[in-house]
Image 1: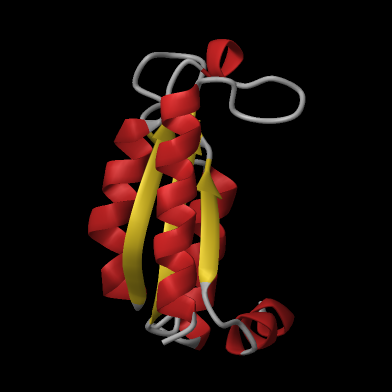
Image 2: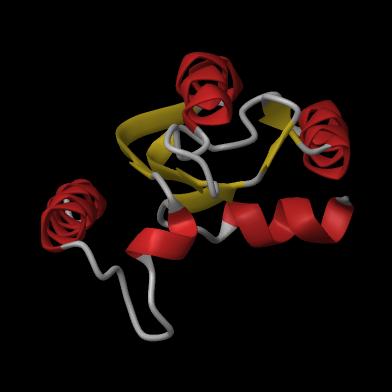
Length: 119
């Protein structure tokens, strides 16, 4: 945890891709957050944060994503954008997001995140 904390100290921002497990984050991810918060309660260092989630279903990991949007600011995240990719197997090819509107939406979110990094 000390080494990971040192890596976080060097970050300009965070892009966090969340896996959903029974409507919440995975146990290993939650455990890591808990231990990191023992080192520094501001795990995310008050830095710009882009949150991502996907799943095979139509909700695209939206449950875990919404939980993170609400919880991460308590751990020092400046959540500037979030994106949920629904129906992963239908909307993602080997190269990229295949749905044009979803691709454009993600591109806008990345640009927003990038603007916050450069401020």
